[in-house]
Length: 382
Image (tube, rainbow, N blue to C red; front, side, top):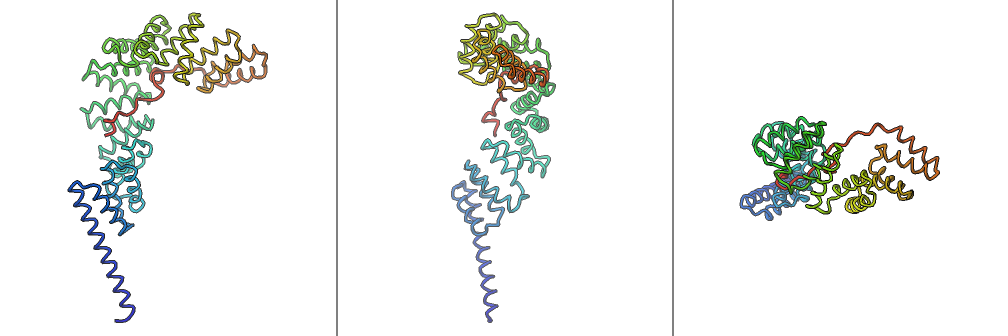
């Protein structure tokens, strides 16, 4: 046999041995999976990827086994290697999205789950996971769109309908939110949280008296429900019913003495009723507990300005502006303080900013009660 023939024979034998080793590793890995020996199966799949670094299926299988062991970061790495070799491998994008989802990386889960849904538009699992991922990422319009379709296919899934209601609420699709909360209350009329959320939706539609009625029902049903008295108090405050609001804020504080929002609005009522020192006590405690309560800084600025403590007033108003520069009231009040201090140029600058800002819009209750939507519960991540 000539030299070239020997070389060709050697290449064929080497390829055959690699193919045989690859097949043996894969077969052994699948056997170990079936036996529930996941750690050993992962080792076998790693061996398979080492025998053939271009075997996308082996990397995908390795990722799957690692995910079953809840080693999501390692699983994601393996899935990405598989996707680089064959992004259309069946089930790969769904499993990658699920691993990102299980880690709580909702934004990272969205692209692979979207790809999985595009590949199979009828996949209820991909649709549901994508909707929940959009919710977790704060993309409420997209969450509502996907969860509506998922919830239609699962009418008995109460948790999914509740999440859809929350998504609609934060997307300001109040009609959708009301429909879902009505559905929830049909099944559980004593659900305090559903009554509260119904109230938030009604408030968003400008139906404040009806919102108050929902919160009153929630407070009667579950008087120690977190935030129920604050929510009711805020609606009274918004309606200028300050005595009723005070009573509700005090009830909330009797349950949670460190409820920063209740303290802030109680301080605001004291300020409105010319009780400056009492107001400052509540307002200062509120900002120590939670630094980003704008109304507290605004009110402290007003009290300091009345007391001619102009430097303190300037600091308070500047903080209120940082928290929401699009609101005109702090700019106007800061301009008045600068005017009183003889700082004409600074005063004119603030008044000019007021003219540039659109008329202040009322803030709805859903964003007042919480700076962000309720986080996903562990069972909602399944």
